[in-house]
Amino acid sequence: MPVLQAVLFDNDGTLVDTHDLLLDSFRHATRSVLGEAIPDARLMAKVGQPLAVQMWDFTDDADVHDELLRVYRAYNESVHDDRISLFPGTREALERMRDAGMTLGVVTSKMHRLAAHGLDVLGIAELFDCVVGADDCERHKPDPDPVTLGARLIGADPARCAYVGDSPFDIQAGNAAGMLTAAVTWGMFDEGVLRAENPGLMCGDFGGLARILIERGR
Image (cartoon, rainbow, N blue to C red):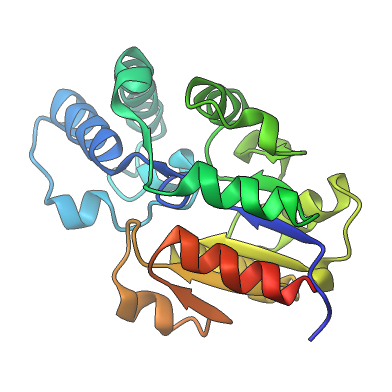
């Protein structure tokens, strides 16, 4: 196993607790535009992919799709800053990894501007050397392109990077990029769904994740 030099993180459900914000945004958009209440499990089934991709699950009509996006984004951004928080131990774990000499980055399916804004609101933006958003790539997770772009931006060999995420799409992307993948169980998806993607690591708390990754960097 190559010595780790960098760690890339997914955003929603990995660094930042946005579960209730995303669910409420989906509920608001689908009820407002479609006039129906879609089951929560279906609304959240593809969280981890770009929002524009997810919205095609609810309509085949391009105009309706665009209106779903517009209504979702307007609601989401209107309440965003008050509805996001860090998972327990996030800042401390990130600081420990930085202190151990690791370079850190964020690779997310959220739009770059909003992802960077959220990191700033939560006071951790300065800990990361890159942010890759959905609008920075033509291809998206589970394709490996976003995570390989993240590695390139921080000057790291993908084989010496870890990618940490809470969705099957994260693990698929990291595995395809040849990275060590770490699936975290505090996010959006059940442990069984994550294990099925064969992650290199399964982690239940940020402190434990930091300990393992720092050890892999020695």
